[in-house]
Length: 199
Ligand SMILES: Nc1nc2c(ncn2[C@@H]2O[C@H](COP(=O)(O)OP(=O)(O)OP(=O)(O)O)[C@@H](O)[C@H]2O)c(=O)[nH]1
Ligand SMILES: [Mg+2]
Image 1 (cartoon, protein in one colour):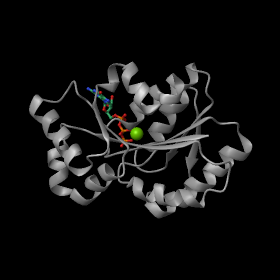
Image 2 (cartoon, helix red, strand yellow):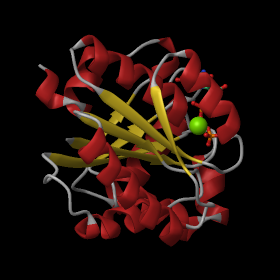
Image 3 (cartoon, helix red, strand yellow):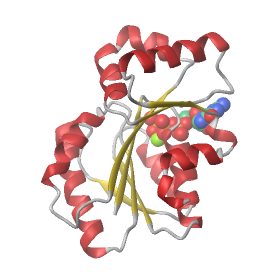
Image 4 (cartoon, helix red, strand yellow):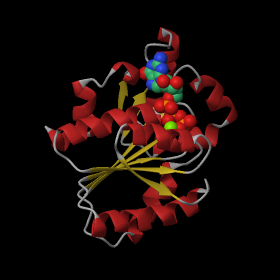
């Protein structure tokens, strides 16, 4: 079982990406579980995901990260023991810091995970404002990503894209930084970066 954690502030494009990635993986013959938590508009998300005929396992906790982590572990154990899942994609709440989920993973006692990847989406049209008012959260999200996706590239100005890239590279020089407009479809290069074992 492989795990892909998707974080990013509210409205940054997580669900849009999750649906497309899940489809790409399903088309490649993988069994995929999508895990969402129950905060904010997640009821809407759940419906959207169900319309796309994906399995949805809701995390029944609130939005607090440590609680989410505990439930993430029991959800992963269930997916491991009861479902032959190849890929688990977790859409974290926009207010969640992936650090909480990553630090809970040692408590997972199922079949060892084949890979754990953390992806963070940055909405370039709002990043500068968010960095001003929510610096610790956004900074920590960026720090705990293997891959940073600058989303909504179609809506952003050249200046906003450059600011997002600079911020991503300054805060986390080790991460791969990609910009894309996921709404219009998934670039094969993006799939190869995020789900490299598919090809
Ligand atoms: N123009 C454009 N819009 C996008 C893109 N990706 C997502 N959106 C739109 O942005 C809005 C938010 O997208 P979601 O995928 O729901 O974002 P989210 O991060 O899951 O949102 P929350 O779960 O509420 O935090 C929706 O109206 C999407 O259609 C993109 O690449 N370009
Ligand atoms: Mg969402």
